[in-house]
Amino acid sequence: LDLTHPLCFGFSTKRQALFKNSTITMNVNGSVTHYPVKYTAKPLMAGYASANNIASIAGKAAVAAHSVGKGRVVAFADVAAFRGFWLGSERFMANALLFGRLIE
Image 1: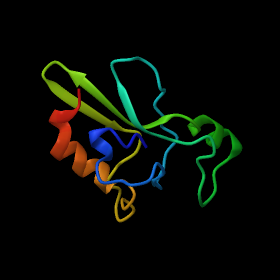
Image 2: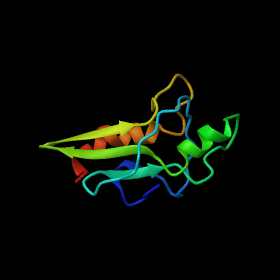
Image 3: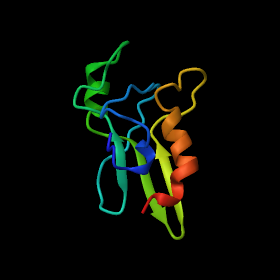
Image 4: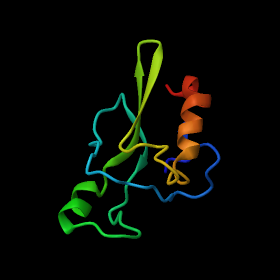
């Protein structure tokens, strides 16, 4: 986590568990977009994922923040409020709603 980014407000460590239930990823590129949440080089903490899926997720963005005109777009690689398994990402969702104006 980029602890200096408004979307990471309230986190005290640079690592946070997230629930991933798809193979959707976001490449990290460009200078206009911020990537405050990225997967580590070894993203699997629990469960099963094939070696190919682990490799395709490693180092990719989990959350991206874009400035578009006068507004902001926050993109999540997965559903941030997926059923009851959103305990790792609920703060990102709340911060996107509450602090979206602070994203430059």
